[in-house]
Amino acid sequence: MMAPTKSEGSTPSERLVARLCEQTFLGFWSYANTFRDQGGPKELCDLTVVCDNHILLFSDKSCAFPDTGNVKLDWSRWFRKTVSESARQLIGAERWLNQHPDRVYLDNKCTEPLPVSLPDIATCRFHRIVVALGAQDCCRQHRGGSGSLSLSPAIVGRAHYDLQAFDVQPFAVGSVGADARYFHVLDDFTLPLILKELDTVTDLVSYLEFKEALFQSNKIGHVAGEENLLGLFLSRYVHTGDWRTLLSEAKDGALVHVGDGPWDLVTETDWYRESRRTLQPSYIWDHIIQEFATHAFAGTLVQGSPETVTANEQIFRCMAKEPRWARAFLAAKMYERWTHGTKDRVDYRVVASPSLLDTLYVFVFVPNAFPSVTEYRQARQQYLRDYCFLVASKHRRYRRVLGIASEAGEEPYRTFDVVILEGDRWTPEMESSAADIQKELEVSGEGPVHRFTDRPLLPPTRIATELASHHQSASRVKVGRNEPCPCGSGKKFKRCCLRRPR
Image (cartoon, rainbow, N blue to C red):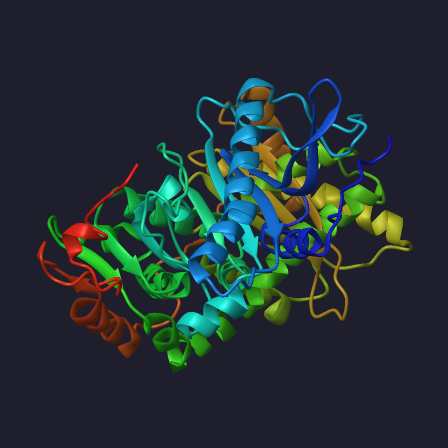
């Protein structure tokens, strides 16, 4: 069976987005330049991400910022060419997926279907992401800082660009559409930053949901560059695991204003540098997934592996759903056994997923004492299936057991086998098979289950207190109707951000 071919993007900006998304979402879930067969091939959007019940749609536009000498006119023209055009493409893509989820393809001949299973459209969650590139230098020139666009929910729809009807605010983005759909607008600075800091599908979706909820709460006033909102979210999310606390702290009647500072405050601390160092081993988790994705698309998986990309995606989906902090814990448990394990016998370790309550991981380490690589891999795959089956029989409250096998002891180069068992129905025949495996392996399968009980990964430091203080004193303000608007326009609050033009 011929493996499907993925696009790497057809323009420089599309290739940038595709490369960043491949690193964040990994190979089974990120697809550039997807198509629909609408009486002939037509591009769906620039990049489609599907993982579990989340669909992330990216539309990319890179346009040079005009220079007429009238910054409001230049902003209006640039916004319509980039943000407005991308938003229209995303609306069309979402409509098509709602109506024809089975007619999405990887190629412009519409012969290679999207190899990942789309979720039930009735329960899936769409995330619309506009990538608008080209304004950073002009934004930095006029406003200083990083050159990232500011966020202002009071700006809605045509108020972004209609110079006849509204006092347009250059380099500020609010609610792009006039309906309830929210569009995330990422620019030259925030696109690589956010995909680097939130480089798992779960972490990124958590941030997108936090931002959408914050905008819909009517509690956010003005954000001076999205990196500052990211700074508040990232530091608090690492420590609490629940971004909703940021929303609950914004009391009714008060607007949250985020000025410059939170992002720099985060990145300049020892806490941030230490957290990045602590999370670094977690990327072995990504490496395992990406190795299988690469071989699945190339058609070079070893004998005994599922043959199709679709079948492999279903196996690795739960691994991809683990957030970064959970991957760090799981990787640490593997590293411990690699370092302290033995090379002369089969060993295993059972670890409960820190974030998926219905999932157990079984790490199996098999010494290579076989005459050929083929025999070794076949034997290791059998050990892996047997250990996972035995552990599943002893821990039935878990619906899913995923096993990862590798070489025993320290090795300069590692290979991996992965298997997944799902379901909670046990027959007498299965009971008998588990008993036979237990007798043959001479292990009970009832050993200790390693659990994550020490959140956060790092002890809280002064960063949490400093951010809370900064947020309280400089970011949350109750503004009177006749006071100057905190966005800096010079107008009264009631005539600026308090208004919500439609």
